[in-house]
Length: 190
Image 1 (cartoon, rainbow, N blue to C red):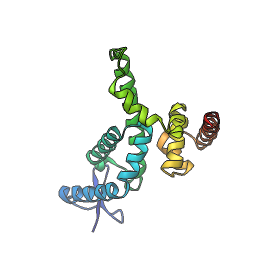
Image 2: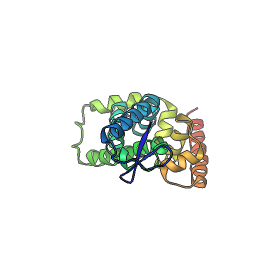
Image 3: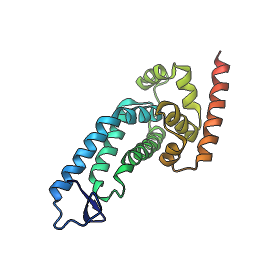
Image 4: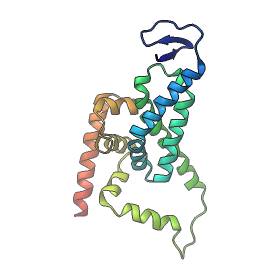
């Protein structure tokens, strides 16, 4: 028998009130649900974050933080079926926040020594070698997010719209413009 907690009132799977909710059982259900989500979707969420952040370690941290936040707020989740969409949105939002933080850090960082490039320069040089990755990185943020979610995460337009909190029409527009910009950029490299 499964017990769901909705707005601090315990109900069974048919929506009937259950007297004296068992908090341990509810917590166990949340743990099981999150383990199942983690097992099924962790790697795809890390891929999304990696493509947005261009840093796998930071992407893993972002996804881990999203799962921790989901665990602590599981009882407040109105629709457990929407947990994956919530996680995707949390990963995208946390990736944005991380990029904003990195911009501030970059602005405050002292300039590298003129004679010697920094270690980050060599690491980024390896990542930017790929023409597609460089062209993808050059796109505006929203176009890059839409293309990553569409072609790397294989999400539908409505799932992308939910994750980015934009309309389906905006998803189509950003995807079309992003593909055109990528085509132009890659053709100029040839």
